[in-house]
Image 1 (cartoon, helix red, strand yellow):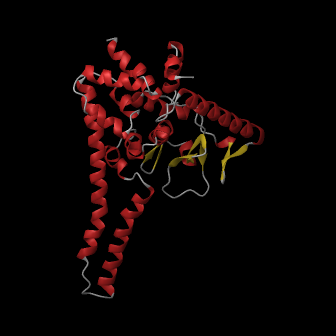
Image 2 (cartoon, rainbow, N blue to C red):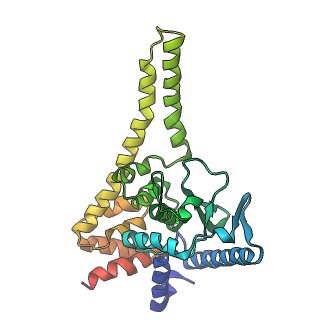
Image 3 (cartoon, helix red, strand yellow):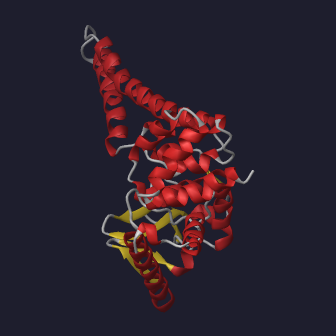
Length: 305
């Protein structure tokens, strides 16, 4: 199917899929998008059949989930209400399970996926089965956070992935700092200089009193400062685009931002007028399925006001 051949009825169906969390990927054409959805549904159905037949399944190597530990729909609905309010999508198809064995003391949950498969499952600790809060985590926030990752996964946009996911948090501090740790090495590079500083201070106290410690203080502060600087640049990019959309009279700004890439946010912020923005967006929609759906869902309603 060619982009230009999409009928109004098919565009409405694409909008319903978008609202259900099946967002179009960064550069997916119609055939690639529907092929991925069909494969995803087939894999989810196969997982459900195996769970129903055997009581357990292994969706990914080394990960075993059990039917009796499946997260009930009413708990998933708590998170869906939040993602719908923030980003105009409501996911109920991603399999979710409680997990109790071999989890970290402070672990709350995660989304598990594989680059070779469209399937994803989310896991949360078993204490959330009867409790809405554990340590700093709220069940609703945690599930909504992982659903945001699921929805945006095909944008392959790691620089803002955590920013949008952490906006589900009621904590202002987590909303601000959440996007600091966006790569696997960030936490490691944050902790290692701190541990080195602690080691040097112990050496100074018990072994080498004249050991200068101040260079290690500088080293310990460098990477946190870099993380805060990078986080501020990301926030500035999002908020500049948000301010431009709000200034142009758009009502559902967050859902639009959620569906944009890092590069597109900067381009939105550069638009000089509502007419220029619409012309630019419609030009992209003629050649990009994601933008065709985005314009249909969130630009058309502004024209109807």
